[in-house]
Length: 112
Length: 115
Image (cartoon, rainbow over all chains, first blue to last red; front, side, top):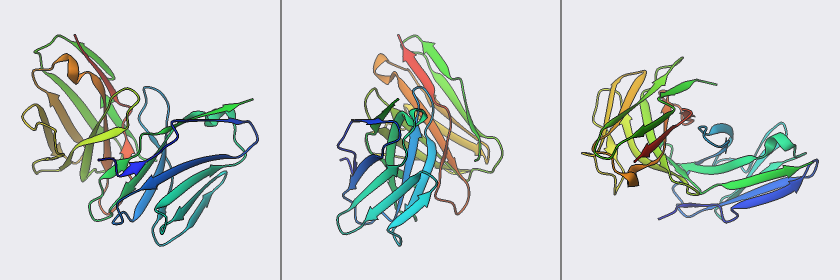
């Protein structure tokens, strides 16, 4: 049963514009959320995270928003760059357990 | 960030043989290591969690006798796929986590192809 869902398998955005990647979860016990970036045939690379006590975390061009009541989080990339083209995975964890539950990923393509 | 390596990066084997994949944390002590599997166009699926010096905890549906995990030290975990079959062909990724840290650092993955 998929507890973390990324309903958009792909997204195409023009360079310089904002990319918004969405993620929904079903388990209300999740209290830590992460975004990973993955290139083909490579392991995921950590991008940004947020704990359930916050609703926003920003790191340079990347901002993650968390709406606990809606069990929804999103990753904003602005401005988008061609090098951002990759698959982005949303992951959630119950801190005490530490195991990560991943969504299926969203493939982002940033076009020049 | 911390570095996690995997070896081999790619392996092709015949059906019925066993394959061992190593996962090493190069610059930190990994109290917990995780093994994931990713089929094409699918998500990363957790197979098992292992803590150094103790038996691995397997996720539902993962055969512990087929996927042997050994976490013998704080820097090394191995996954052995025993009697591999074509349906075991997948991308296997390990991750490692230090003590009292949620973030996991991932290895580059191992592409297993069973003929």
